[in-house]
Figure (cartoon, rainbow, N blue to C red):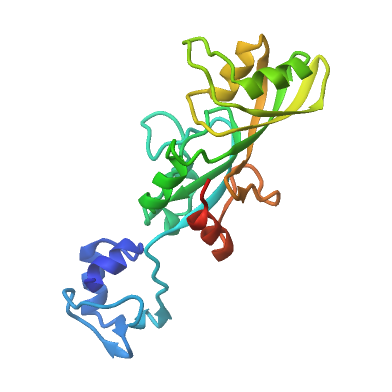
Length: 238
């Protein structure tokens, strides 16, 4: 990889700005000053330093975010704040994107990465990756609803959902539940409850496959996945 491309991708400035760093002798590879922007380096082997600081290169980035309400799951939008807007510049330079989406008013676990292959596997309908949600429901959730969800409910457009595992945490005028589904239809959780005559008034995603939301993350906060979490996602098969 060319040294100017690598450093530009890592956020050290534009190609032009990186060339100036090279010209000024601020970039070293294996303890040797490099001035040629076309110089090729192997990020896995060569030690690259900028202004005396070792550059940590990584091809992919894997982030876990506790998505807040009011923010959309998109990379850019002319009017609305996106989850990418919540990232630090040092993470935005990797051009991550959300793995799937959460509705604007839905909170909770959202994975972001620039690893397209991993994202494709997690989102593939063939994988049936389970996603678990906590929700507050306007209405009394009953055992009949559990049976209905297990059998698959008919949405307003005629689509019959795959089986969902519904657990009642509290049943009352406002019920609290957890629901695990293996699909990702548009507004699916909300539409499933509408199909049984109830309304979701709060929704939070708790997990996706083997990845569970870090309870220490406040709304809008995020962190990099651990090596163990990344490996679990890579190895995940359903």
